[in-house]
Image (cartoon, rainbow, N blue to C red):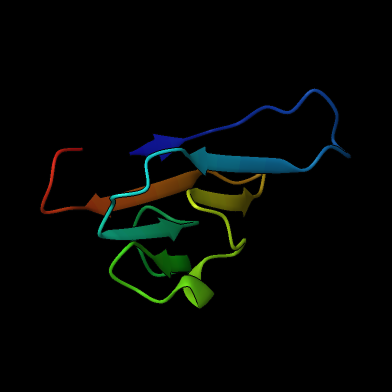
Length: 77
């Protein structure tokens, strides 16, 4: 999945929220070649791998760069 976000203001922080907790593995990248991984987390990994200790997944992302997601799960997506 590829995301490009345009915030209301350049000063506003931008967050990607995945409000679905049973995702086994989530990788967030800054580039299409998947070489600049920002986050690796999921419900099979320790809570400490999440940028924010929430029951769902919250990622701060850059509004001036595209964001790419790779999501894997044994259950339904």
